[in-house]
Length: 137
Image (cartoon, rainbow, N blue to C red; front, side):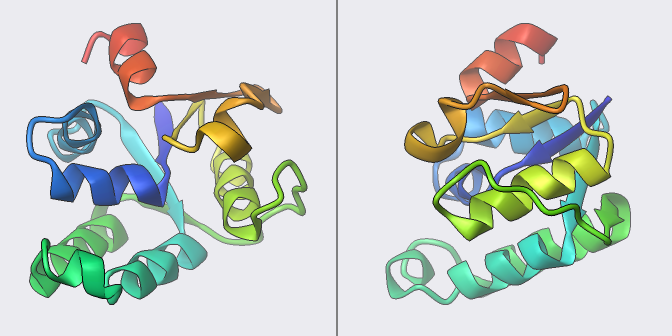
């Protein structure tokens, strides 16, 4: 099964060990599903890692290790389709990666822009808790 994990969930997983976001990230790391990402998301993670409020809580090498692991073992898609489902272009890029990669799930914590959409092109958009419950991870 292919899954896109929104940047906010990946970052939350690094920030709060034992959280649902951390459990989703660890599920990917142990091979429970195939992660789908894009260069745009990898760039977003690198950009977010420089935010002062995050740099105080997560060591830069942890972000670097995450990006490196994603580059090595995730399906990195290109040629993203044009998608307009959110007021936030970063959210549209995440949805586009899910569509381009044939993902079944997009795991996000974005209540305002993404979770309210629920499904795009057969991609179920769910919270970390809902994903864990639905997949039994």
